[in-house]
Image (cartoon, rainbow, N blue to C red):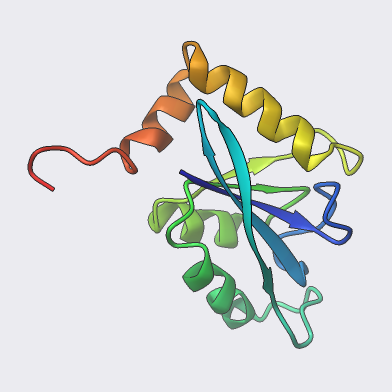
Length: 129
């Protein structure tokens, strides 16, 4: 599954979803993780009530299962969830991407919590697919 992180330094989860100019995307499984790409966003991304500015991010993240953020507005969170992407708030801006990825790999090997099992269901193909 693909996991995304809002970041300004490619090390920490330290950017607000709406303001993030970069979002790093990783592929993760119970065997490990791999960096895939950095999504770059241009323009005036500061808070201004312009909901359309997040459309490129919503479109770019549609194949991700989870996006980690430091903060996200209610409207943006609802729009992500509607597209099947689960937003998760980081513990702090000091939280490192690699730390979260390592914990997720460990969790995937064991018994994932209900919210993660639900998020995983969308990426697990079944016979009907």
